[in-house]
Image: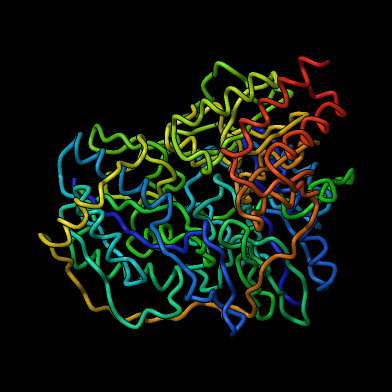
Length: 325
Length: 256
């Protein structure tokens, strides 16, 4: 039998992250297609209880120690390398998340296995595994072959259905002792997000501003529109990083996940990192000058137009509607 | 502090990206390159550290389209030294790049002591993953990525990393480390083009010849554009017509 598949379970503050279930869904399909085993590595401090949620795996390997509360990337990589050798795993799946960032590169360097990032899909192809990655903010796809299905793959969030990775079944669980590599990177504490003036996760209507808003002064346009609609403004990463909106208004991978009744995206291209935070909103309307912008893939309605041409007529039309109603 | 910032230019995705005739790469004819966003932030974080705690900033980049402009721009913003690594760099992916940077940093005395290496977390085309952790492992230095704040003190660094949902975590590290910067503590400073031109006249880039020892770990079999999922219904017409359509749609959903 070929080498098995090993998934690093991701969890934060006692909760299994959705990406873990996404990887379980993808890993299960791939393991079945290739006729190999699927194991989970559950690494942390007193995390064994979480194993019960990982029923799609053939087995859950628990590595538990106080020093693994929030371990350094090199510590996790060393531990996964030991597990790969002990358990004959040839393919490792990691979450393409901030929490796991760094593990894949180090594991790849130390095992001499290829590391493929930004994975959006994968499938068995004979003895090999074909990985499709999403590059350039989702604008280009790339196919890469892993000969013999051996390698390290980091899976982008939102690529596989998380629900298909959940199971009621309780998996076999085994505690595993592996040597722990010490690291001078020491975790101190979590810092909760600052309480903002507005909790964007609780808004029915969000006007989301992206790079297309161009300047800080133009933020006011979005605010006026949001006020007319009875909602609030939020933004994508570039707008927050420029300091034009506070951190509490950030939607996406590092920011908040929102699901308002209306998400009006102005000048947002919709990179995967942004989509991660808003794609489940029932009514997404996107305005962008680029007809190829990925935001139109998740939007219900799209407008290819300069947002500055649209905002004033839109405000006027809303006011007219309100006055007439 | 002895600050080193590793820079890389990436295709500007505001421009249309076209796949080349070989079906495995981007057509260079239409590409416009720029520093990736988090590179700008890595550079800014280095300047903030220098301003507060003293030291020098050295920027280093592998030769690539428009990389000289990026290096001169860094000099114009206040970098003390700019180095371009040249050679047969076609097909160099993250691991090979990390090896080249590691070789240079070792020769430049950037390992240990008060040498801090800053670079982006991950670029939009780093198919083979982030360079930072590769590099840190090669140099035997600690690594932390997705960094949004760096505070030296007590002989070490207190570093803030982003997790998900606005959650951040605080870590301590020795000063001699590799940090993948996601966002600087302040927005990247702006430098007028005249100052960049002046830097081009008054300063020089150092060039160091390097030889990559390993190609990419895997060939790209195929590069292509995603099929438009076509889920959005596109609204067309004049801005006024589109605005009226949108308002009708919102009213139908009781959103107005």
